[in-house]
Image (cartoon, rainbow, N blue to C red; front, side, top):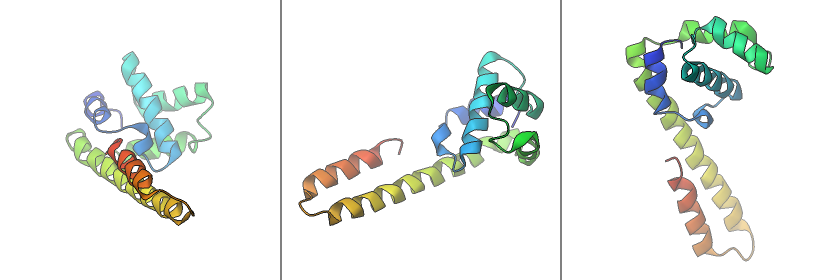
Length: 127
């Protein structure tokens, strides 16, 4: 969690919306903010920032931040694990787009060409 080189590497691979849990997106945002400011990114610093922002309780408290820090992988593997998160996020987006397309296709008067174009556009973004 708190290795500056890992954050720099992973920042290129992940967007906050790639995280399944909103708490993880919030923690990621705090990590990025600290990293960009050149501040420490350890669990104490992340917890302090989240406390100042009013988000610490929402993410599960300092114990949740520390648990994530303790579960962090070796800095050399960060890209590998970030790729798993990003890939899973892409699959969730495909699943969501498919469900939405099925719903829209069931509407009377749906235009198949418009639906097809909208589905392609949705899948093209952050793919």
